[in-house]
Image (cartoon, one colour):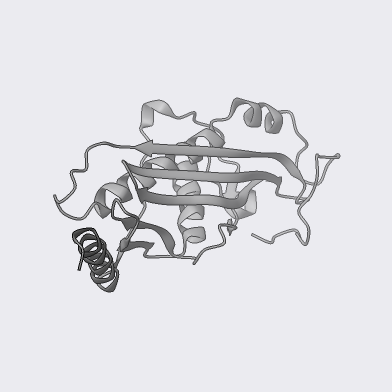
Length: 216
């Protein structure tokens, strides 16, 4: 066998062996925004479940690959990603003093998860993209809708130093936190709802299909 063919055969065999050893790791993404970097508000908000639009499994977050692209470790969340994002908004509202009892809420925070993932290519990376809607709690009308992103990257991982999954989890958590913070601290959103109609009064900018009062 020619040396070049031998090298190709060895590389192919190595890739097959790595693929056969692919493992799955489960992680949690945590929301922990710094107190000094958030905008407090009135306790007038509740959350409604976000919808996962990522077109992947509801627990899937990413795959660790070798430099030639061979998958070696799949990264998943312990709970569905939609539940994780909804909970992150709940914690963020609570940390701002904006979380309300459902019976007294003026606004509902909900939306769609367009992207949330972590990956290891050249550098470990986390990315989040969320379409967030603020609804009038009395009518279901959309008072504000915008897409927010967050991303974190690190060069700290050294190949061969162990699993990069804990670092990827930290980066994905940070990306999610940034997107959530940008959504809730958006001054345009705050100004719109502060001058918007109270539940059951006046027109708004749209409405959510199928929404009914009390559907939280």
